[in-house]
Amino acid sequence: MKSYPARIKRLARAFNSLTDRLAACTRCGTCLAACPLFTETGREADVSRGKLALLDGLNRLAFDNPDGVNRRLRRCLLCGSCERNCPGGVRILEILFTARLLINDVAGLSAAEKLLLRRILTQPELLDRLMYWGGRLQNRLTQPVAAQQPMVRLKWGPGFLKNRHWPKIESKPLPIDSMNAAAGSVSGRPLQRVGFFVGCLIPKLYPRVAHAVVKALAHHRIETVWPRRQICCGIPALAVGDRTAFQRLIQLNLNAFAAMDVTHIVTACATCTATIKTVWPAMASALPPAAKTQIAHWAERTMDINQYLVKQADFTMGSTPGTTPCDVAYHDPCHLKNSLGITAEPRALLQANPGYRLIEPADADRCCGAGGSFHYTHSDLSRRIGRHKHKSISASGCRVVATGCPGCMLQLNEMLSEAGDRIQVKHSIEIYAEFLNANSSDT
Ligand code: SF4
Ligand code: SF4
Image (cartoon, rainbow, N blue to C red; front, side, top):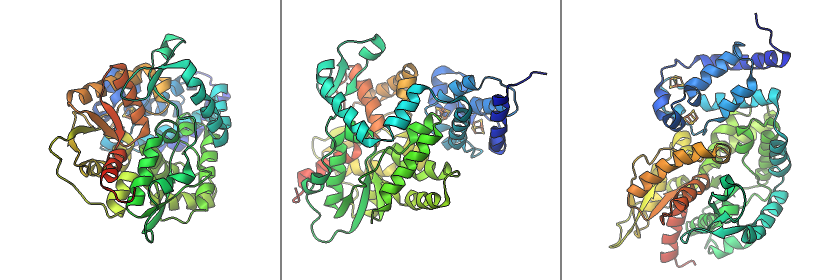
């Protein structure tokens, strides 16, 4: 009989906690057609059925290479499409997240991952400083590549970096203090006060989205409050299995939220919304009871900005497109559709602007291939999936593609820019704010 080293046995014991959840998979194979990665590669190990079988094997000491299992686990967009389509209701994402944590408890993280997650991501001031210098250096190191978006590429460097197109980094932090005033201060008594969880990507890559959120909220007499010490929602740390950084990021955010007197937290990032609402509660079992209570409190009160405006504000549904509307295609972010079931509200915001006509591209809810850090760690696969998305958007004949997640915007921008396509990428809240700007007396 094979002799396993102690750390593998320790890992297998830890995996016992997943036995029941793994057994819920009947191996029916429904997830195969839903998985954007399996559709691309045809590899069983890339889809949840194969991944769950791998984990079951690790649990039963049928594998002696946790690093290999870890590598295969990380070949996943965490898009949740398999879970949404699973007839057995298997909690696939929860299993995959837990498995990544357990494996990294034993296998450990690389020095680069520890530096990025524990030293930089958990310190917003340091991240801001790095972005400031990155923003200043980008003018020397990059050149513009697309006329319609501020996209750039490196002037020098190895091909795998030089050939990529990036949105320009905004070097200055968001001018939080002046944004409410610029949006038009809430006239009269505000109907509600909400906290704005802005996330990591919006301030650095798409600050215009934050301005649109504040503008739209002010229009509906909603006062925006900024949790000053808010920080990354933690999903990048959880995705690589860094329990320490993930729990630290949750706790720092809870501290930041604690001082706020608001009815809701809104976000314009599908991934942040899904993380706070579904991932925090699911992965909070090891946190102290007080933290769990706070997580439950905020999970219930956190809303996607599209959903918040349609459900909680005096939003008016529908309008007839003008005589020469601009065709806008909508792309469903996985973390809005698969994780939260939000599909109608972003479309309602787009349809509120008569300057646009909503069209549906083929496979509007197909993953764009971004997958958070997957976009960089598995860039070939990410781009192969992204090219399908680009084709369907381009074939729709739209002039603008809208979505509800800055991660998707980044991927769509890159795919369109690399193809030399002039279709613009916008967040749905931007299109709604354009309409408010055109008709508003409070600007
Ligand atoms: S759809 Fe669900 S039950 Fe079927 S193989 Fe996939 S994970 Fe297992
Ligand atoms: S989360 Fe997405 S990429 Fe990962 S196995 Fe499920 S469907 Fe495939």
